[in-house]
Length: 364
Image (cartoon, rainbow, N blue to C red):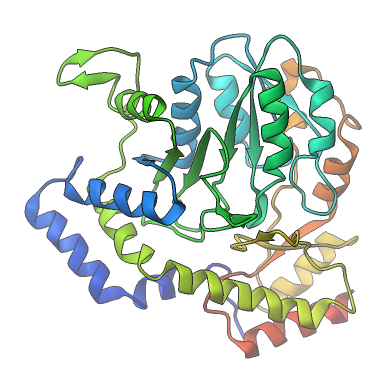
């Protein structure tokens, strides 16, 4: 048996006719930039998340940049975030000349440890960027309380959690600005790069919309320094079709996770989801001591695995100037050496899950 890790082919074939028709409509109209589908998608995203304003953009990375530009983040400002995430979270902070300030993670959820944030706040701190890792949102109530106390902005990096809930509220609607990614392998993915931002603040919404088109307020009138950060219409048309079925996809992902849990709970620590959270299971990640050998053995059996993330941000060469050393974030460092993601997508069959877990159990 050969297992597909994300199964993007099935994701397309399941709705092939509708997606092909949507793409053809855009091609026929030739409205490739800011076509009507962009505005339709933004309306649908607003309704889905319960936010007042949804703004599409060119990628999850650009969503973070747009958020910080709208908040007037400047050189020397400090943004608190996690070292255990994809580089975009901290890279975008550094890109704007600000300083990423890392806080260790909670060992059960792998999200930022909210109890360690306050000690990292200084007079230079301007925002907290919380990453919703593997499909589960961090403890945003605690973060929002701290932000209010110190007059800080809160950005949710929800690249992996679109559709997840925290105490009944959707990812993207639990902070000042929520950001997400529609990278193809995300739970809701387009056929290239894409992203979105969410806010309930009209001034921030207007500013983000302006900055994503080079700071324009009207054609050739530029109020802000901006970027070319638009989502293209073809991607919006694809996302509109996939969004119609997204809640069903989430349920199927949750069913896959439940089946994994049932097979593995007596053999290994299964992923932990807070009782007040729902996860969209961007990844199903377990921890093993002899990861390299287990990955190699599973690969021989046709079972792909992945590591998210093997080298922490504070130890990356590009962040050497922050002068961190090994041992600065012990929980993150331990988890990064043990974490391993199993195949996760809505199309995994019971037979495939049994095959994966049986082969894994024999290696534990």
